[in-house]
Each structure stands twice: as structure tokens, then as C-alpha cells.
Image 1 (tube, rainbow, N blue to C red):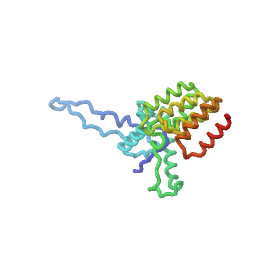
Image 2 (image 1 turned 90 degrees about the vertical axis):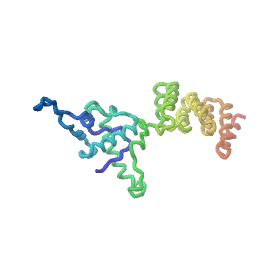
Image 3 (image 1 turned 180 degrees about the vertical axis):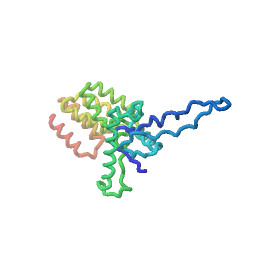
Image 4 (image 1 turned 90 degrees about the horizontal axis):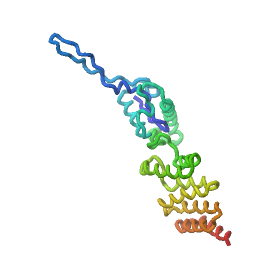
Length: 258
């Protein structure tokens, strides 16, 4: 039986497992000649219902294994896509997940040609490829920028610390120096003070990141604080002495202050 490997999708519990997970029904005891009750033999688990993307004859065990892979990839549980009646299509996430399954299948059919490799050598996408343990596969920098726009920089900074506490060491988000540098670069033109708040955090975790101090210099320069901008560039150049662009930028900035 062909089994799909799925990508980019929201968790999917396409088939009804309610009947499969429910205890086997038993017949009420019937009195025999001696008056003792005789229980009917246990009924086999019911087959999954309402399969629309997986083949309808997919074995129950394979459906369960597929569902477990989805929950692990997205860090959710069955209720993310299912109501009590597992066959029901009440939740939007279940419908979206079906479409993600179809999309993933189509992508995997095109991957070998796109990378010019035989099908057995091409890397196939799966839910984990994009989700990496979170329901919404969004870049950390985009999440923080959205929060900054909607709730302000303090809320965005608090969110960073919360996400780092919850997800650091996992594949969910990129906590390398590049994420907060990206946030700062996109804030510098209009909100240099907010950019500096994120860069200060970055400098704590990555004191050897020349790019962090280079971004700090740009933020200070936007504020009109050339002395601090020079100090930042001097740190950046000292951390990356083989970068001629930093030295040239530093010379230009020093010349502009004389």
C-alpha cells in the first residue's frame, strides 16, 4: 500500500479513528441453561472512516502511524484537527491539512526533476521539513516583527525570551545571530531604538558576531549618534579583520566626523 510522505502542511487526521479507538462493543450477557452469563467475543477494531486523501483501504495501523507523525511534526494533539467524532469535518484545520497533503504529494512528484536526481536519491519533503515542531511554520524574525507592529517592542522582546525558553535546542526556530539581525535591519530605518534593543540581546548571546555590531552602528547612525556608530564599527572590524568592507566603512565614517 502506497504511503504518502507529507510536507508543509498543517496536522492532518484525515480519517475517523473514533470507532477504531473506542472499546469493542460486547453483547449483553445471555442466560444459558445453567443461568450463567456468556460474553460475546471481542469485535475487531473498526476501520477508519472518511479517508479522502489516504487510500480508503489504508490499514488502521498505517493510518495511526501517519497521524502520530503529523502530531510530532507540528507539536499538537488530535484535537487540533478533530472533534470528538473523528470522522466529522468540523474544523478548518482538517480541511487545510488535506490540501497540504495533496500539495506535498505534488511537490514530491516534481522534486526529482527539479534537482535532476533519480527519485530514490531526491530528498522528499515531509511535515517536519517546514513545521519542525510548530503548527505555523513562520520564521522567528517575521513572528517578532508582527508582534512589534501589533503590540510594541516590549511585547516582541518578551516573546523572543518566551520562544527561546520553550524552543531553544529544537529545530523549530533559528536562534542564531541572523534572526535578530534581520529584525533589527527591518526596524532601523523607522525605529532605530527598537532595533538596538534586539541587537543588545544578540550581543549577549553572540559577542563575537561582527554583523551584530555592524547593525548596531547602522542603528546609531540613523539616530545621529556618530560616536557610538564608530565604536560599534570598530568592534565589528576587530572581530572580522579580514573584511575590507568594514574597514572601508569605518574610515569613511571617521572621515565624515572630522
